[in-house]
Length: 173
Image 1 (cartoon, rainbow, N blue to C red):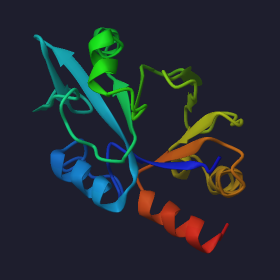
Image 2 (image 1 turned 60 degrees about the horizontal axis):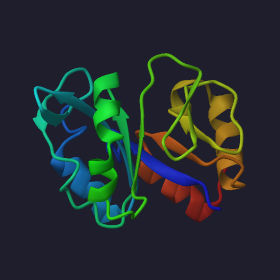
Image 3 (image 1 turned 30 degrees about the vertical axis):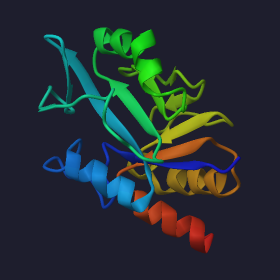
Image 4 (image 1 turned 180 degrees about the vertical axis):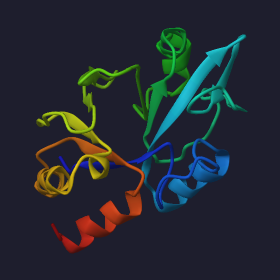
């Protein structure tokens, strides 16, 4: 299976705290047909997007992500619990379009789809999603690109998703 590219916080062009985890960024990912990771919170009976805090009210049960796969990074255990309910999976129409996970500073964490969300710089293996390899070192990034291009990891989560799309097209390491 081909390694996947995941837009970290729905960033495509690099880190941008002003546009990450927004409807505009989500729509941009959908337009480019790129999977995304979104930071999600559950608070006072509602879901919100936001990295450091709940910022934008958002309903993951009804939003149409079209063909794009979404990785919900639950920012609290309560959020994870709410997203793992039967209601959540019924709302997907069993399309397997979403994965959920919670982590803090773990070396790796298991997602609901049995992939390993792997902290930057940690060892990678076949079911790993390499998170932010560009922020570790040039050597680690090159190593991750080699694994990615040879489909030896499940995917990469990056702020520079469009660059990884281009890498795949050109097969440049």
